Amino acid sequence: MIPMLGEEEALAAAEAVRSGWVAQGPRVKQFEAEFAATVGAGHGVAVSSCTTALHLALVVLGIGPGDEVVVPSLSFIATANAVRYVGATPVFADVDLATGNLTVETIDAVRTPRTRAVIAVHQGGVPFDTAALRKAADGWGVGLVEDAACAAGSTAYGQPAGAGAAIAAWSFHPRKLITTGEGGMVTVDDADWATRLRRLREHGMNVSAADRHASTQPVLEAYLETAYNYRMTDIQAAVGLVQLGRLAGLVAQRRALAARYQELLAGIDGLVPVRDPAYGQTNYQSFWVLLNPSFGTGRDEALAELAAQGVSARRGIMAAHLEPAYADVTPGPLPVTERITRDSLILPLHHALTADDQDHIVGVLRDLARR
Image 1 (cartoon, helix red, strand yellow):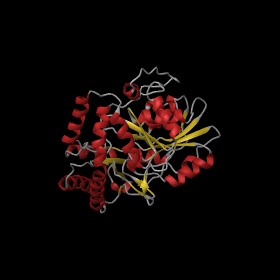
Image 2: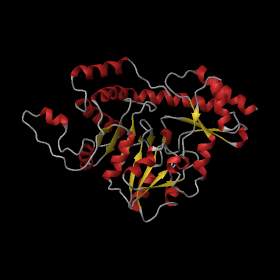
Image 3: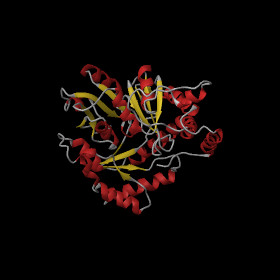
Image 4: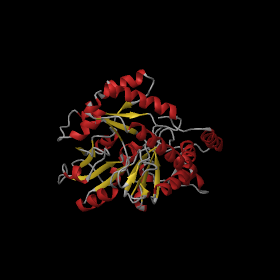
């Protein structure tokens, strides 16, 4: 992945510096409003990362010690870590082979009376079945946090992936389609939740720094609860506003590149590329391929050969339950998760990728398949 950053972003960041307002301020407020409108949410609350967004989402839902939260093991480790931040217990569920996402059935298989929430991930930009999971969560009486770290520009049922979400967490890390360097966002429709989220990200203050400085009279703030410093800077937001204007074009370009990959890879036996689910469209934040036994070459060997041929591929999505940090957890069977994390790899996909690049990458894979 190569982030799409240019002169406009550099100028926007410089203007924020010249303005003298570099901490959380007016540009953050504008970015929140424009991002929320783009993803179909009522309110946006900018934070320092998607990890802190997930943490705050669980705090707002009242999740704590003694509670269980169902999460996919097949996700970046931050998804499970956020559950531990609030003292709750992550419970790993398996995923669908085609999408890499939780389903109603895989969640229900591990749900217990202690389950208070589910964190469902739009994995690699592939949207999960929002209609099915939201309906099921409502029926179970549990909170649904949508980990949309990779999903800006993806759609489900004709709407942006975050539209209709009770609470969703987003990432602006450089590996995502749009970036602020580091940074994240929580989107909600509930105005009271948005107010509390803004307070929680700023040490629990009942009035923001921007509002204090805008007042012509002294403001004596109060700290209403123990909270955090999870703020975004105006420099980051200035870059984010420019990036947001690029989103539609980036999605269109990546989908065109993904379609070409799929066409080129179609004739290679034992190799299954990621595709859109029936109910939505992915932004192809990641383009992964699953290697079946008939491919004849293992994933690690394929990665080594790609690297030798100058191709910067990487292993597929990690499985948290296999990491040392979760060695104390004994999950139930996760056959699909372990299959995907063992047998998949992610191919280069970014705005600077050329047709010649793709031809070379697919050529290496075709040669491997012939061995």
